[in-house]
Length: 114
Length: 112
Image 1 (tube, rainbow over the protein chains, first blue to last red):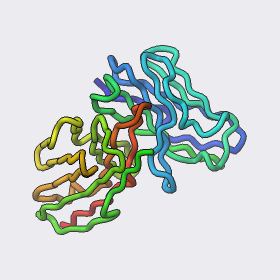
Image 2: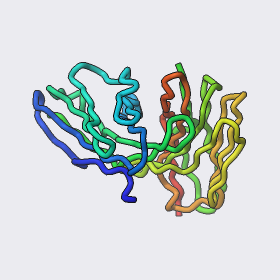
Image 3: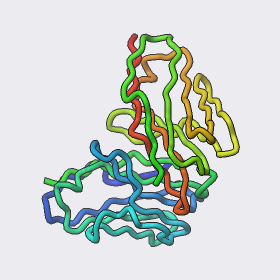
Image 4: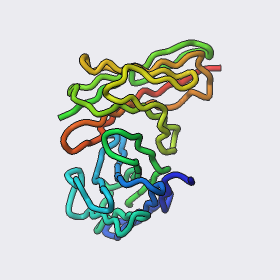
């Protein structure tokens, strides 16, 4: 398996623009997680899905952030409108089940909002 | 709310030394604890996963222990090599929301 795939790897955009980050989890994994990493706050869970259904989105910072998982092999994290403080590395991770199994992380998307 | 602390924040050792990285957590009701490695500008690589019922896990030169009652875990690296230089992150899975909470990491430098 190729592991968790994220695209794009780098994104530079201007304040106010819409940004869409994409993730393909490991085949067969039924949990998908979105994290954000910054120097100030470290790694934080934004939202996670089980069998394509959002379970906990309490980490989503604002209504400007939204996430979808239309099928078992694809998820998006959208920021609209983007702001400079959204600049961070966004990671997607997947696991076979929550509670027992390892989470496997993608390479991340480095987002810079000017 | 679960809090995870890693000490030290940075560590520099000469090649060949054995070393220990520490992780502590405030809520002992965890499902598992995972150690990750992160290289600069890269994603996280899972090193070891310890279930709450386990005391330790080993993989090659790495050994991780878990003392759930005291809220502590250690990652032992034997015979360190320059290629071990990276940031090591500890994370615990806990809570009704089954959230993975990360420590801030230990930045390890192994000098040749």
